[in-house]
Length: 485
Image 1: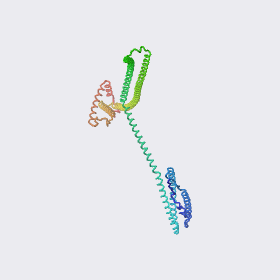
Image 2: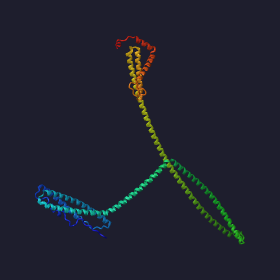
Image 3: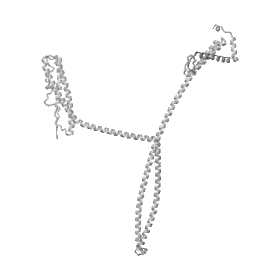
Image 4: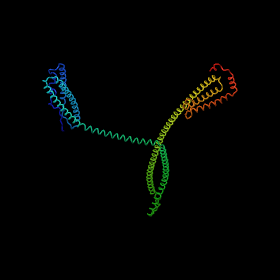
């Protein structure tokens, strides 16, 4: 077995940070600096020294033994150990970078405050820093090599495993999609078949017809079987009689050929008994053979009967299933019809409720309009009464003109009330049907109304009570206040 050895990526003869930076502990103790800065530099140097010691200890622990890469188990252990080494090298690299940054900052800060005589020490430290950076680059290259080895060992297996899993998942998904499509097709077919009630009725009629035909066929077969059995029995009896006659005739022929008496057996009772025994045995064997054949035939007919009965039972089951499905579909259709009727009734109820509310609103508006008209009428009557009381001492012509004006005003008010129902507006209560305004039309209508009011007033005053009242009013003296007016 070929074994491949792997060594520590950092060579054994590599110098540590303490060897590279021997003056790290004395970096903050240069003469000429201030006391406070000296203390800070000494403290930083001590922390750096501790970090360097810790890193050296970790590097001494990182040693890779000989591993067998051909065996699978050892390869897994190698991968794990390489991963651990990689992680530790990463942490070490980070720590080294931090230390380098600190040393650079220290060198930069301390270099400004040092005297000219200290330039050589600064150059020496710069050289040491460059060497340190070179070691860091070497460590980075070793880390990259380890990563490439690790990826070469693990990536291929992972990729193949992932690709296989992906193919399996895609195949399962495709199978599930095909199953879903098939189920949807079956569901659509079932819904279409359930939606068509005529197909169920036709199927039920067809199955019932097939069942009736099979029943009739079964009855015919049973009748034919009975007839065949009767014919078979008759043939069997005839066959037995014919065979007996044949055997007798054969014996007679044999006796005639041998010049013997054909009826000699009658005189020989023992020979007759033997012949009868043989005949009986022959009959029994023939009967057994016939019974066997008859049993086979009956068995076959019984099998045919059972087969027909199973077919009838299957047809009955199919009819029951079809009736059950038909009943379920009928129930569904009935429920849907009920839902439709309920929805229609609810919609009709809502519509009637809206109509009722609209009618109530209309009646309310009409009542308001009627009430307003009555209030206006009452106001007009009150004004009339006031005017009649005030103008009782005036002449009859002026009184009639005034009353005609009042009647005209009342008619105009009435027309305004009727127009307010239709939603039309008028300024002086006299608006034409076409919405046009004209002064001449108003004057003519006023004249006509005054004439009509005068004639109506005269007709009203023609009664004897009104005439006597008017005479009394005309003969009564006029008060001084009214004369002054």
